[in-house]
Image 1 (tube, rainbow, N blue to C red):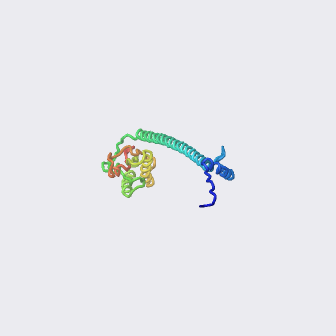
Image 2 (image 1 turned 180 degrees about the vertical axis):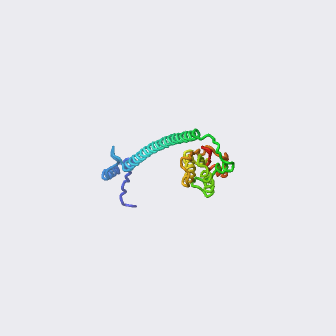
Image 3 (image 1 turned 120 degrees about the vertical axis):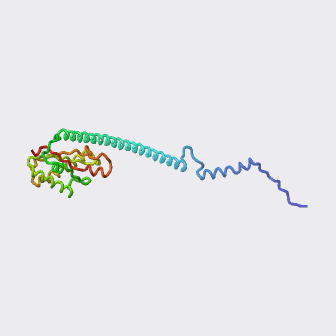
Length: 236
């Protein structure tokens, strides 16, 4: 037989174990500072709040930029509309001015006068001269035609003429009126420089208002860029 005394076994119930371990757990938690204190903000919560604040700030800035951009676009559009209205008013005023000037030229146009010339001289004196596109300087053909007119004027000292400048339909009314006047002035200047008294020659411009050819081709425009000559005082 076994002579060693048998020690009684001690069973600890679960509640008893928990009570035994609890003080140690409490001490460890207390030593580490314990859990979150009431009212304390954890780092993750602070980061989340900062990120939300940044998002709100960015959104507010975007809204301000959007409002400013809309206001700028409205301002630009309003300025463009104002410029368009002003430009249309200026163009209308210029067109009215050109029409008034052309009407004044028509009113001041001399009535047809018998030239008192023989038929060949009359045809030569009334012959047209032509100009290159957007030019008022005389071509070689124009100078030759003016030289023939010059001889007729020199031979008939009482004879007086009117020169009317014309343009094709391209370009503004205002520009063409001025160009037609330069063309008429170029022909007059040539005749005056060659001995014809300035008072014997008057000039005017019809711009594009009296096309010789109503077409819209290069050939038509070439015929419309011209000077016309008419007699205002007959030779006899």
